[in-house]
Length: 171
Image 1 (cartoon, one colour):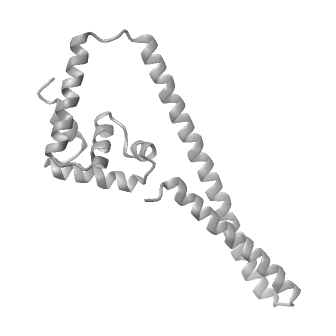
Image 2 (image 1 turned 180 degrees about the vertical axis):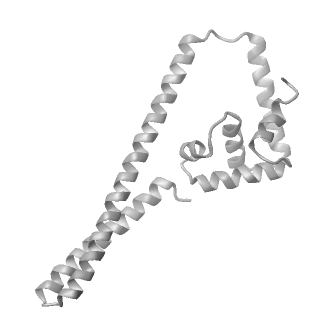
């Protein structure tokens, strides 16, 4: 499967080739005496293709910047969490491990695929579908489909019921 970033790079390459081809075609047409109407039509195509290239480059840069900021924020949050929080007591660590084991066992009983399990863990951690797609380097649509498959296999109606399934009786 092609990641969102790679898909946009391929689109950028295609539009770049269209721009290059259009520019070469226009210069050839002008030297061979093509009609003004023909040159104008091809120039419009060239302009639209060039605008698409600029738009894709801007989008890729924005995505890369956003990913960089998210990673930086995550590292900072981990650092602050490690610096400001004292280590949990053994009983808390034991409870976390037991809950993790229960969740893993339930995922196996629901026969979730490895990808669905990964998405399930990230959903339980509270990440949005967009954030999960970014982390997993896939389309948000794919994550949405995987989440729907999880809910269907679990026999529940959505994200809130999914989380509640594991913690409802604990609280």
